Image 1 (cartoon, one colour):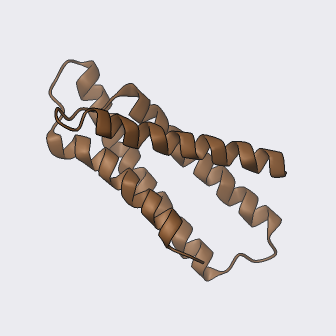
Image 2 (cartoon, helix red, strand yellow):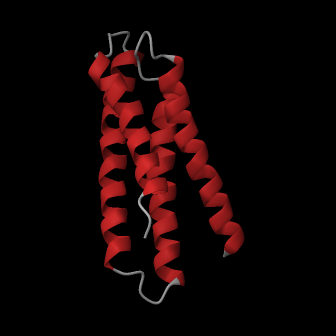
Image 3 (tube, one colour):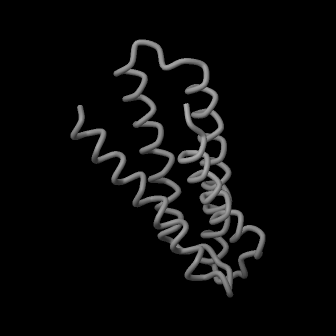
Length: 120
C-alpha cells in the first residue's frame, strides 16, 4: 500500500509541475499546452486515488479531511475545465483567451497552496 501511495504522490506532484511549469513557460504569451491538460487530468485522477487510499487506510478521516478534499476536488475541476477548453482552442489554431490560460495555472497554484498550507 505504501509503494502505491508513493507512486500516486509522485504522479500527483508531477501533474502539478506540468501545469504550473507550462503556465510559467507561456506567461508572456498565454496559451494552454498539451502538457498542462495531461497534468490537470493526472492531478484529478491521482488526487481521487489518494483520497480513496486515505479513506481505506483510516478508520474515520473526519469532517475537516472531507471539507479539504471537497475544496481540492472543486479547484481541480476548475483547472481541468479551462485546460480542456484552452487546449481545444489552441489545437484549432485559435487564440486562447488570456484569462482562460491564466486560470489554468493560477488555480493549480491555489490548489498547491491549499494542499500545503491547510493543515488538518
